[in-house]
Image 1 (tube, rainbow, N blue to C red):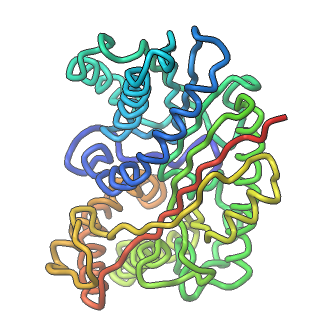
Image 2: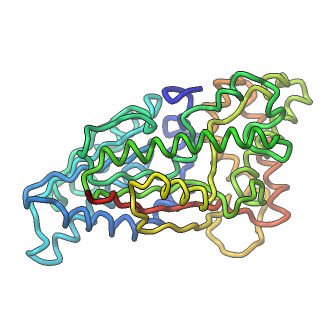
Image 3: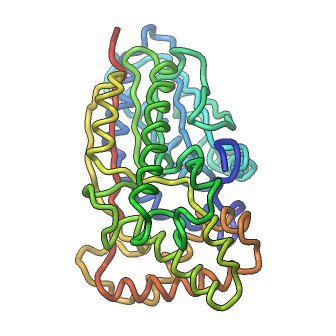
Length: 373
C-alpha cells in the first residue's frame, strides 16, 4: 500500500458511510475552534495589501459535513473579524483547497457544497470565497512555494504514507496483528515509528516551503498519552480488538490465517514527546500551542466519568465509527463477504472491553507558525 492508494473512508451517505458516522471527528474539530479562530485572525491581519486573497487548505478533508464545517468556520471568523472595526475591514477573498487522496468521495463533497451555499445565504454576508478540490497525497508536493496562508488537518496525520516495506514484504513479522498489539515484536514497533518519523519530517518540510512567511498550520490527530504503546483507551487497543475479531473469523474458517498475518495498517499514533521532538529537530516552525485532550470511544457518549452506562449500545456505536474508517481497507484485502459478521463480532468485543472501564482516545492538537526569514 503506497501513498496513492488504499486509505479512504466509506463513501456515500448511507448508514455505514463516513459522512453519517463521523461525529467523533466532528467533536475533535469543535474542540480546536478557539485555536483555529486565532490563527485565521492572525493570518487575516498579516495580509500584505487591503485587497488580498487568503489561501486556506484542508489536508485529509474526507467527505461529509465536517469538511464544510471547517470551511464555514473560517468564513465566519473572517466575517466576524471584519465587523469589529473599520480598521479591520479589508477587501479579502478566501480560496479554499480541499485535499485528500484520489479515492475520496469528492462527488459528495461538491454536492454538499451547493447545499451549504444555499443554507448559509451564499456569499452575501460572507467574504467572497471559492472552493476547489485538490486530489493528492499530503506526503508529497501540493502547492507552489510560499502560496498558502493556512494549513488545517484534522484526524489525518496518524495515517502513514505506506506500510513499512519490511512488513509488506513479509507475512510473519507481525503475526495475528493489524497494528501494534501485545504480541507485536519490538522490531516491528520500531518500523512503525521510523515510518512516522520519515513521513512527519517530510510533511513539515513540504508545508514550510508552501506556506508564506509567518503562515500558520493547525494539526489534530490521534496520539498517545505516554510512551507506553498499549493503554486501555488508546487507538492501539481499539485496533487490537479489530485484530481479535479477525482472529475469531480465522478460527471459524471464514478468513485465512495468512491473509490476517499479511494485513497491516499504514498507521501510527505518536506520543506528545515524539511530536515535539520532531518539530524541534525540523526547526522550520515555532510551536504556538500544543495540547492533548481526550474523547470517548463512543461518539454518542458526551458524558464525563469512567463508567459506560450501556456497554452493548456503546459497542455498536464504536463499531459503526470504526467500520466507516476501515471498511474500504478491509474489503480491499479480505473481500466484502466478511464485513457484516466482522463488525458484529467487533461490536460485542468492544462492549466487553468497555465493561471494565470507559475508554477514551488521546488526541494531539498542535498549532504552528512558520519561522520568519
